[in-house]
Length: 323
Image 1: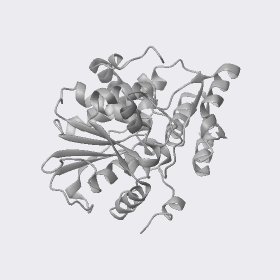
Image 2: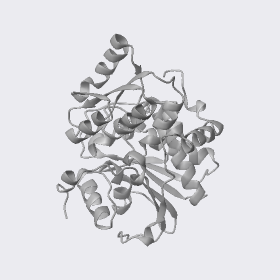
Image 3: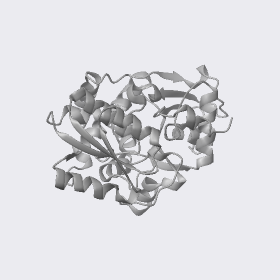
Image 4: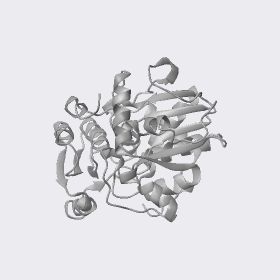
C-alpha cells in the first residue's frame, strides 16, 4: 500500500474503472439523481439541489462500486479477508459468493448483529472483535492463514471504483458548484472528488461530512497527516478507527473542507428522509444533514449535489428514530 500515492489516480485510470464497474457481473446500477424540488424534503436555501440515490444501489450502498473494481483486478479463487462495520462487508460477501471465492469479514463488536447475520448468509465467515483489535485480527489472518487483505477504504482499485459515482453525477450535472459527500475512512469522498476535479471541474467545491464523534478526516486535515481516534457515532459506517492514507492524500488535494454534524442531526435527517419516502441509514444521511443544518457555506443560487450513500437500515432500527 505504501508505494501508491495520489499521483497514481489518473483520469485514464478512473475512466477504465468506470467501464469495469459499469460492465461488472455484480450488476452495479447507475442510480437515479433527482431534483430536490421533486420531493417533499424541506429546504430553506434557494438553490438547485440534486440528490444521488445511492441508497437504491445493489447491496444497498455505494460500496459495491469499489468492490466490483477490486474483485475484477484480483486473482480468481483467492481467499480474502476484510474489516467492515457492515456495508463494505455486505458488498464483499455478495461479490465473494458471485465469484466463488472464500472470504472472511472482521467486524467491530459494536456493529448490529443483523449485519453479521446477513454477511454470513452469503457464505462468508464473520469474526466480531473490539474495534481496537480489528487490524490485529486481519494481520493474523494474512500471516497465519495466508489470506489476502482487501481494504474497505484505503485501496487504489476501491477508490477508482467509487469514482464511478462522481462520473455519473457529471453526466447529469456537468458543472456542479458544490458536491456534498459523507466521509468515514474517506474512500468515497476521495473517489468522487478525484473524478470531478480530474474531469476539469476546477471551480467545484467538494465537502466531506463526518460525525463529531468520528472526525478522523477532519483531524487529519488539521494535523496534515492521517490520524486515528476512538470513534463513536450512531453512523457506524462513518466511524472507522483511522482515516485512510491514500484517501487523506486525495482529499487534501481535491476537497474544499470537512464539516461536522452531531448524532442528533443525523437521527433527525434519517427521520426527515423517511417521511419523504426515502429509506436512508444514518451514515447515508450525513450529506443531507449537513445541507439542512446549514453547515455548507454559500449554497444560495448554486447547483448542488447531495449524495445519499446507503439505505441499509432495518425496520427494527428505524423505530429508534424520532417521528
